Each structure stands twice: as C-alpha cells, then as structure tokens.
Amino acid sequence: MAFQIPKSCTPQDLARRIHDGEDLYILDVREDEEWAEGHIEQAVHIPLGQLMQRLGELDRDREITVVCRSGNRSGLACELLTEQNFDVVNMTGGMNNWTDRISFGR
Image: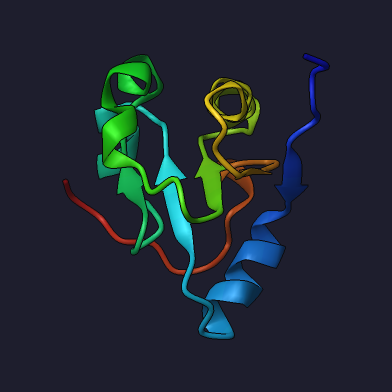
C-alpha cells in the first residue's frame, strides 16, 4: 500500500472552523503535563504513547484533527491512524502556534 500524506491545517484554520460552529473531532496527543498547561476546549486527550492501545475510543466515522505541541507528534499520530483507516488532519505548528482560547486542567 502506498503511503498517503495526511491532510493538514494551520492553527488559524482550526480556530476559524471552531468559531464557525463546525462540529469537529479534535485529538490532542501531548503528555498529561502539556495538556494540563492548556488545551483546545473540546479536544479529546490521548497521549501518543497510549494511542494504539486506545484506538477503540476514537470515532472512525468522523474526520479527526490531531494536535500536539509543535506538529511532529501529531504528524506521527496521523501516520499511525491513517494506517488504521482513520480520516485524519494534522494541525501543523501545534499548540506552539495556537493563539485562540484554551482550557486548563485535566
């Protein structure tokens, strides 16, 4: 099977879609400490190291936008999820470039 380049979006694209009221499925693959320091309000949190064991928690029928700190781990997560037939989008630049509202805590 040929490798497919996952779709991508910028943090600004994702923030606009949220503000437009789109019903988005956002997966944050950062570690617990990073999540607690601030995350996108409606995101689901599954650290990258737990992702393959927790695939059953993800909705296969929806496009999943994957988020991390810089875009590297989310890119890897997108590759792993694409291999499992999920429809994924990588938020390039990660939370380092996120300028919209964030939520705190676990």
